[in-house]
Image 1: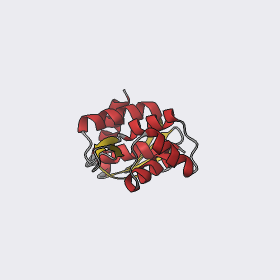
Image 2 (image 1 turned 90 degrees about the vertical axis):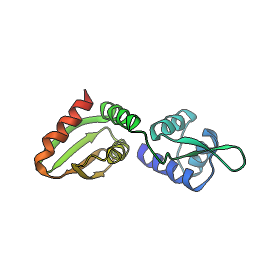
Image 3 (image 1 turned 180 degrees about the vertical axis):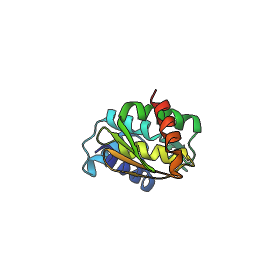
Length: 150
């Protein structure tokens, strides 16, 4: 549900001018999502949305075009610690299980990390599949993930 809602938020703010959290909550309600202001606020923070100036000297929500690497690293660490249930591997694949509704957000952050060994991610509701190349570096990626988990 959270992943679908955040995908809808992304769609809404790219197609329409959304100035306030209340505006965004209204659009989500119209799209069939039952949300509170607190939920919208958390989504905005998790998605890293920013406010940018508009032509009429106001501000609107936008998706950041450039994510600062330090913030991305911190976000990955936080998401890993808050959502991961288990990590397993086989050959050139790593499977990460998350609490339901969090795999898409975590996979998106992992994609943005641009780890050269990770040639792709596939995310469902609660599972992420990392495709690693070459397969000999799977232990390196696993260690990186476990180090971030703390």
